[in-house]
Length: 457
Length: 115
Image (cartoon, rainbow over all chains, first blue to last red; front, side, top):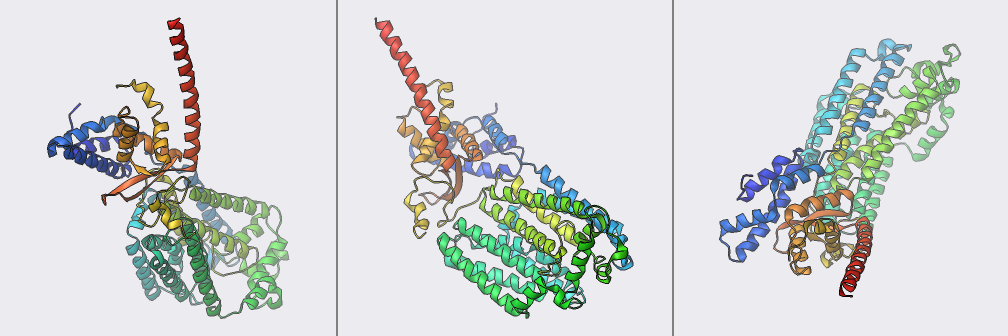
């Protein structure tokens, strides 16, 4: 065995044994600090500097066996099941878009092009795997760049890309789906900064919310508000800012309520009007309630299995069912029956529950926030979309995750890849704990400096 | 006193968890504390301690976080979790039962040898 005399040589020998690259620097740092402590102790006892270092290395034990032991513990945790389910759902979505919409009356306008759909599926899979193998800690380590970059990119999207006839900006409308994750990264900057941190968190949220209003996308705004609220509550549970959990929750409630009230006011329609529209579309069947009525009529004609008879359809249903993306699920019920729809909805629910459970078990705090942002974005979209496809249109322009639309699917797959990257790296990712933020789990006796942040709770 | 290695290795997790019972510590501190408390009997090598700690963290018995130690240098502190506390109690009980049994046998042997 070659003799290792210096700390650097020792650490290099340990790192050689650890196969997972991401684990190496984390493990090496802890060992390095230990070796330095030990070296300083020997030096204090009177050893010469070189001798002290040699003794410290000797004291540590065989680097190969230490490295081998650590290699055994620190392995990536593959997420094959979730990867497979994600790809399977995306393939199902692509098939549905191509096959169902080609049979429609307006297929010449809305038909999904099989080549483009296949290309999007490939791109989505590449994004899923790319994000999966990405070291997600990069996002939090460069949170400022990520946040400002998103603002600039959305700004550029707003200025340079086309708008729908309704006024919604095309690309910026998609970028909004990334806002909750960007917000989670932003929260990392605010960690341990007390009330200043909470103020920064609120400002970061307000700025993103303002952008969704400019796009404009009510679905994006609501998703950001709900996901942002969940993230802040999760952060409060970890006493993220160091001002106490209850105070963080109260501040979060205040800011979210203010934003919600502003949004309703800004939306123009009164809440009562919206509720009436949602619950009684028949009162304005040829106006605001047209879409809801069309969907409900079609669903009413649908069978348990197999296509509804088109001959008996009211004029509404013919038009709306051929709308791409947004109404893919009601179209599926109408053309294939309730059972295939229920099976697909159950598969999506299973994916979301699976992701959520993994997220709750995540020990790394930043990782938990990033994964939660992904799960919330997908879940909120799924719930809005499900309601819409049953004829209850809370907000327009939402797609079922992984099913509706090419670009939408690509973004969904990238987001899921990011969450899986968190779960994959959960055995190694470490974090620093600023002065005022103590670990939140477990019990035990706390030293006074650790107990201090909890006194106000 | 040099101890038989196999006697020590099995109980090391118990000792490490016990050290964390009265406060969070970082690795170097644990080794020093163990030396002190055992009157220099247990000289735990760092190369044994860190894989052990990381393994306990994987099992959820300890959590780790970083903060500055007294000298202003950042150190990785370990904290005993609720599950870790339960595991500690269980290990302590079985250790005590084992030690009592060994004690009885040794005592019996001494008594018979003396008879």
